[in-house]
Amino acid sequence: MQTANGLAASYAPGAYRRDAIPVQEPLKNISRFAKSLEAGDFIERLPWGDYAGLDMHVLPQYVKNYQKKLESGGVGWVGPKWTHRQQPSDFVKSRWQLLLMLAGGLADYGVMKVFFVAFAFAEIVAYIKFGEFSFVFLALVGLHLFFRYPFTWFLQRNPGVIVKDLGCGFFRPTGMVKFRTWREETFEAPFIEFDPYISFHVNPKGPVSYKLLLRHRYTGWQTTVAQVADVHKVELYAHWDELQRYMDVSQPLPDVPALEKYRHLDPTTAEYDAAGKRGRAADYWATLDLTWWENEGYPAHLKAIREFPWSTLEDRMEKSVPNLAEAAMV
Image (cartoon, rainbow, N blue to C red):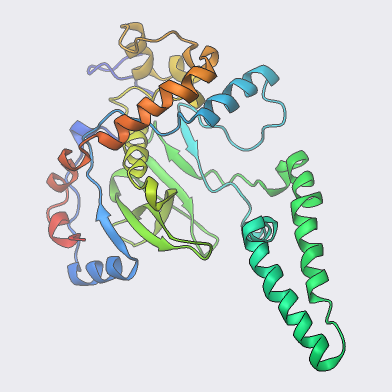
């Protein structure tokens, strides 16, 4: 069933449409808001509602994984799926997150080289001074071997152990966002109430990295959308562009491998494809020549992302939130 404007009635009234963003409440405490942004090292607010049409979930590895998933019938894949209704997030159990960070560090060759040198030197000093070893070095070697082999082997074969779907994610039909907070609770609010920021972070293992964060302008709760190394900062613009178009029910779904088999289920996308506007076969990503995509197709796509004039995009949200530009000058 179609509504008068051509969109299916299955989209909720609150679904996001870039040409129909309602007027929202202004920010009430501008100085406090600005200070919180400064404390969080926010460096750039991204514009709303003007699109480049460039996606990030088309990396060769994503294409390869999609084709392997089709070949295996989905065997060995766990966790909620990215569909025409929900882009899931926050489905790794919280108690596993710190352990996975620890495991990643202890299993990493670069990190362990530093630890090995430091602890080996400490053991030599301890032996010279006290005439005995502390065996901390051996314990470190044991942890490295454990996390690199049996621990990894177990998770690869039992990935469901660390997954707990709390129903978090980005919901296209309703225009809602739900994510896990640091209090181990879930927070839910309309997509249009979030402002996108790029922030910088200094990593323990090296140089600066950048995060794309969505910050709820009325409460301060925030969630991470993507994180990249400093040299790939421009890719975060494409991440935001893709997410907006995914949530915008006036736009077809992003043309990425994960969503290909759901395109006919989304009313706007089905209408778009039926009109021949996609310009690709229905199984484009499923049958794509991966070698060509790795060597020619994706490098050209990445070049387009890096050369696109992102600073020229219009910010339509400033017309919806009266004092947004004044409050978020970062």
